[in-house]
Every structure is written in C-alpha cells, then in structure tokens.
Image (cartoon, rainbow, N blue to C red; front, side):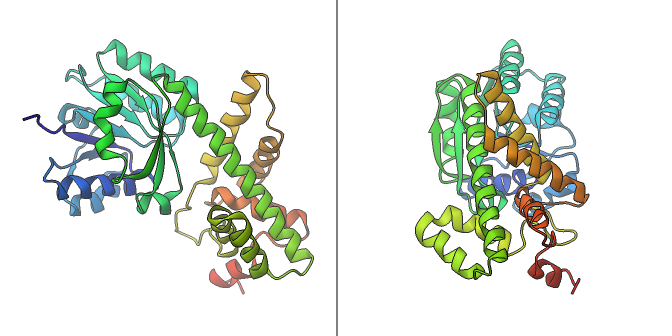
Length: 317
C-alpha cells in the first residue's frame, strides 16, 4: 500500500492561511499526516495549530519534513528569497515537488523550475483565481502547469479541498503564470468599469441599489460581487482589517500584465489606465484593497475618496 505524501506549507498571508487551513482540515479528516508549515511571522499559523498542524521554525525544516511543499507568497522577490532558503536546506531535494500558488511573472516560474530541476526536485506553477473570501470557502480556481506525474500527485489536495476546479496547461510552467496574468488584467478591467459605473450613477442621482440589481441580473454574480466590494466599503477596509486583495499586489499583478503584453508586441490600453489609478490610490498611505481605484475615480468626479457608508462605518461622520 502506497504511503500518503507528507505535505508542507510556506506562506500564510491573506490567501495562504485559509488555503492551508482547508488543506489541514482535509488531512485531518482523512487521517493523513498533519501539515507542516512556516511563515515569516509564525504566530499567523496559530489557527493551523488549533486544527492539528505542525509549526516549523524555518523553511528548511518544512522541506526536510515534506514530500510536497506548497508556497503562497506575495511577489517575485518573496519567491526568489524562499527558493534560496529551500536550496540551502541540508536535506536532499530529490523527488520532492514544490508547488507555487503565488502570482508571479512567467519568467520567475521558469527560473524556479530550472533551479529545482538542478537539485532533483520538481516544480509546479499553480496560481489561483479568487480573493481571500473565496479561498476561505475553498472555491479557488487553480491554473496548473508542470510535469504530468507531479501534477497528478497534488490533485488530491486541490479540487474539493482548496478549490472548485482546475485549468490544466501542460508542462510549460510559464503558461499558468501567463493565464493568471491575463485573468488578472480582465478582473482589473471589470473592476475599473464597474467602479466608473457607480461613480457615474452617483453623480447622475441613479439609485445605487438599482445599479447593483442591474449588475446582478444582467451581468452575473461576479459583476455583482465586485459591485458589493465598492458599495459595502471593502475597497477601503476599516483600520486594522486586512483587505480582500492587497492594493500593492494588484499594482504588481497588473504591471506584470502590461509588461507581458509589451514583450509579445501587444498593448493593454485598459490595463495601463487601471495601473495608473491603482498607483494613485497608493498615495493614500493606508492599507487598501485592489478595488480602491474606486476612491480615485470618485475623487476625479469631485466626490470624497470615502463613501458615506465608509465614513459612517469608521466613525468619521
């Protein structure tokens, strides 16, 4: 009888923590070995400890105890630093599978694959679609590229555990990162359009709930959810609360899209507009959601960055 692989996890940000919690819940329910995890701030993993997971003080410790290592990291620099830490591990990497669920430039995925291959390990690029509430509900969409056998080995821990489905993109790890980049561009463009619609409606004295109903009935649940991120104040989180999807990461993601398009001789006109609005939102110097371009558009129209709802919620009014 084949022994189930031991699973490790590196990175417990707003996406990594709920994903790891769903994975540990699955492992516990199937009598599997507990998840081994680490994070820059180890206390972020306290909810995992309550579920029976095992904390590790360093990345090499996770690597030593795991056959499959999932990573959820903020950006390309974090990926590079984590890879360096894994490669410094004294334990052998032969036969291990490293799965990156982060959103990074396709070139970063290709470099990671090469570095791990030199050490006898495999690399699977597996970025995901969905903000943190989607991760909490285990409804993420995975875009997976990598060696077929290694992809097969991680599938029991993906669909129905952390995600609702998978888009398989062959063995070229650049492909999954490219698709995620394209998807991020489309998402950001939709958010720009919906935010502009809400600003227009407010200036024209159209009822906000009528706009929301139109989006839900005619354009579907995704458009309606984006609308709610604006009208319910998620674009500008309360003090001390993490955003659904960090503004700085959105700047990175849309920037990757614009650059990847340039590299192949295309131009993302809407992407460039979105990127400019996201960068303008960063001047607020407070933690904001990727949808905070709404505040910028409001200000351009002569409105306050914060809606009446946000000001009342935060005790400004």
